[in-house]
Structure formats: C-alpha cells, structure tokens
Image 1 (cartoon, rainbow, N blue to C red):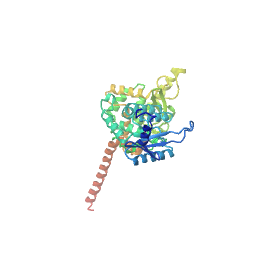
Image 2: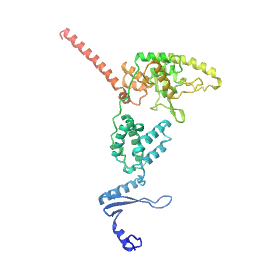
Image 3: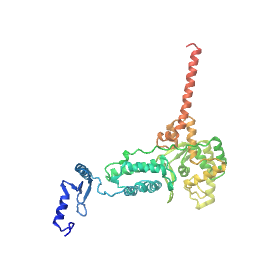
Length: 406
C-alpha cells in the first residue's frame, strides 16, 4: 500500500496529527485555520461550514473565528467568501433599478463597466482594501479615457468614488459586509468646472442668428432664466404666468436609450423664476406660433402644451437643443455651448450683487455650496469690488474728518 492510500491506518493517523485544535481553531502544518458553522438552512435543514485561513498565528485564527461568529449572530452575510466586487455591483444595480431614474441607471452601468470592472471587478469583496481603490484611481487619472488615451478628470474619478461608497454603504446596511473600506480612501481633488459666460457682443450675435428659428424662444429662455436644457424642454404653457411675470420649473426631460421621458428636476424641487422682458416678448410671439401650428396640424397635433416643440407639438430631446445651439453659435461665429447660457445667467446675477443663496435658488442648485464651488472666482471678484467700495467710503470719511479738524 502507498502512504497516500485513504484506507491506510498510518495515513489517517498522519492527517489527524496534521489537523489538530479545538473550539473551531485548527493547525494544519505551519498555518492556522478557523471553521465557522452556520445555522441550519430553513429549507434544506442542512448546516453549512466555512473554513477561514490560513493564519500565521493561533491568535489570528481565534480573532477571525470570533469576528465571524459575531457577524453571524448579527445577521451579517459573511458566507459568500467568493463574492466579487463585480457581483456586489451587479446586485446593487439590480436592487436599485426601481429607485433611480433610467438615465442615472445607464450612467451607473457605464461607470462600472468602463472603469470599475476592468480594474477591481475580480477582487473578492472580503479582500478589497483601500490600496485596491487608490491604485484604480491612479490608473483612471493617468489612462482612464477610452483606449487609454489620457486620464479622466478628478471630477470624473470622484463620480466613481461616490458610486463605490454608495454601494458599500448599502452592502453594510444589507449585512453583506461588516464595514465600508471607502471610509479609508481619499478621493482625488475635483476639477474646477469650466465657466465661460457669453460676452454682450456674443449674446447679440447668437440672438441675431437664432431670430426666426424654432429655437429662438428656447435660447432666450436659457439666457434669461438659467434653466438646464432638460428643464427648458419640459416647460409647458401651464408653467407660465404672464400676469405675475414668472415661470415655474417643476420637471425636466430625460433622454435614455428607451426615448425621452419626463422626470423631476435635478434636485427634485420646484422653483419659480421671474421672467425678464426678453423672455416675456419671446413667449408672446411663441404663443401665436403655437396656436397657428395647432390649427394647421388639426387632429395630428399632440397638444400637451410644450412650449419648445416641433410643428406637431412633440417635445424635442434635450440633445436636439444642444445641437441646435451649437449650429446657431457656429453660424454666429461664437465658440460657446448651450450650457454656457446658464453660466451667463449666473455671472450676470453675481455681477449685479445678487447674494449667493438667491443665486442658488434661481439656478436650482441643491445648496449655496454648489454655487460657490462653481462660481467662486466670480464671487471673489465681486467681493473685492465690494471691499474696495468700503475702503473708498472709509477714506472719504477720514478725509472729511481731517478737513474739519476732528
């Protein structure tokens, strides 16, 4: 008989001596192991054992055993030792499908498939460490763009950080893991957003180029209210009060693979913005066009009250508005994007002395902190002007005292 024969008594004795210990802690050769026994399965009535190892010392094995037993008593799901980061993200995405918007879901899917899966997707969730995350961030910052041609911005990598943190917080709440390793990870600095407002000359050129087009009203609303493109597309005549000269922004259009849908605003809040004369005149003209188009189309007109719509009343996709603005701006010789009309509105507000909280409310930011993070340079310049005026006033007061011999 060979020494490895299972029926060999000497072989059995050797194995017994090689695996020795008590209370769920054993030694095999030069390493220590822990064995954890789970309660019986409600359906099969069978118990499940999970081996943890190998540890260099008996104390490490005891600590692992005690931690696992604590987790079992508290309902933490430590059984799936082979659950990977990819598995966890897939589970979270599936769980979140009914709670987040379709566009947001698509954006999350793109983040995980492009940036997370290729780098740490295969790492077991129980073995995920802060170093894995930081190494991924460094890779994304240096060669995270498609085909490795350049790195992502700090802001883009922070989106990855935010998603991972959200998923791991959920995993802790669901008792899939016992702690969130993201608490030990510092995200990269956020890239300063490009803020390019249109100059007065550029505003005139764009408005001249848009005159008479289907996009004239939309562009005038964008410049005079600072609305996002999806919000402009979702505006209906019921949102307009020409008597009080206000517009109420309640919703936004969202563009996904399934088509265009209506959702809440970015912050989920409703806001009311006063209408400037430029917008009021544009809306009055558009009202006449709207009535004429509805009459011409007859029963084919989809009368849902959208202001920015095609000749049959159908709303335009948000990307269509961006494309139209780009073409109009190019024709006008202006190198600006549609989103720069929002920056223009904000810059004019700040330059006129509007406080940050009011500016944030008009722009639909969640907090004034968001406004400060985007327009800090403009606000700083405005503060310098204000302090300069204070200095002038103080100098005048001192000069007046000297003249009167005080």
